[in-house]
Length: 106
Ligand code: HEC
Image (cartoon, rainbow, N blue to C red):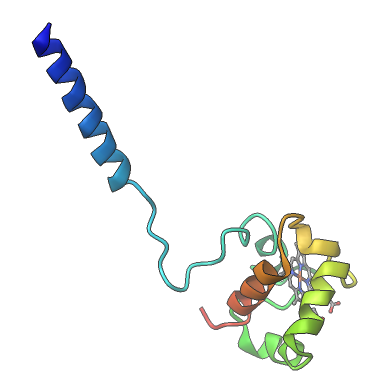
């Protein structure tokens, strides 16, 4: 009986260590969490005139409008870009991070 308890405890410890080992590490320069499921759908390759992610030249005239104007464009939508850019849960701060990521050379 004692032996069984010991084995069970050891098993739990091994499981905990394994869980720590697979925790994903977010590296600097990685896209924000919402990117792949929302903005990336159009901006990854520049669908329908969307400035492509990492294309600094394409983003330059957009960035010249100022971050507040760009966040407003995402919130309200702009031409082929739907309001929210397919991310209903993104806050203004999230959108700043997403825009900054897309406008930066990768
Ligand atoms: C369905 C496709 C689509 C998705 C999804 C999308 N965009 Fe866009 N986005 C566009 C297109 C097309 C334009 C260019 C609009 C134009 O100027 O006519 C654009 C333009 C922009 C601009 C420039 C706005 C301006 O005022 O010049 C920003 C900033 C932007 N997108 C951010 C985002 C962010 C952040 C997300 C994700 C939350 C996102 N987009 C998701 C299609 C998309």
